[in-house]
Length: 322
Ligand code: 13P
Ligand code: SF4
Image (tube, rainbow, N blue to C red; front, side, top):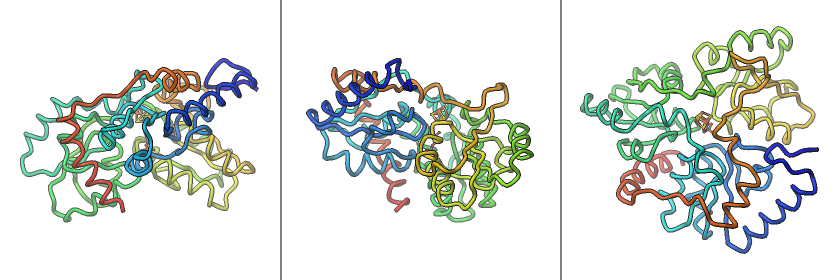
């Protein structure tokens, strides 16, 4: 069987994994991986999780390491660097950006915030360090409701950058937060019609939806939640078949945790292919992980003054998530 994350065969992949594990030990490195990266990377990581769990892990266990490698996207690695400024933080591929973070340039967001004095600024972690620094508190999809609920009902709130997550939180809390008009190109591509077709074939299959999806898709959901919430639901549910509307990397963990169950990826609108990949997450490969660890390349640097400003809303989020 071929590995998806590199061109090597099984024997080559085993050698690569062995080399990474040895490098990890020699260099006192910790490997963190998001559920969306290739399964081979999830399997070799010390901690796999959603954005919230990865930030929490960075704040806790990564402190014992000299090097932290983030197999995910750049905003996650920046968060690790802000939380662990004295560690060497590496990424397998520095080009692993995020369309959602890109949809919220800091100068425009700053102008938006300044145009609304008296508003508290709540930002999703999928943002640049500069946008984080402009925020009062951060959220992930795993804690957004809890953190929004911690503000008085009549509080004036700005929520950025994801219009879909913001609209979802508005709908379940009855709030009218002002929303920044940003989105993730992966989650916006899921097709409500495609899911309806799958439902005809699998009427008993619960539909699991990430809140970055558009409203028509969210309305079809039996469960809306972060990757960790959807994974937990899939593993604990009595159902044996699920339709999954989030990035396809999560299917690896679902299939590992419940090999007897069937997980069907929800289709994207403009493709006949059954799954929806994040091109940024998929830039992470075993080979690039080995290279960055061996050569200590692709180090993440964050301007210390910006980091100082971003740390406050990150820590506030971590405190409110306890
Ligand atoms: P969560 O893992 O927090 O659900 O985030 C999804 C995401 O888009 C990360 O890029
Ligand atoms: Fe960003 Fe979307 Fe990729 Fe997540 S799935 S990293 S939000 S582009």
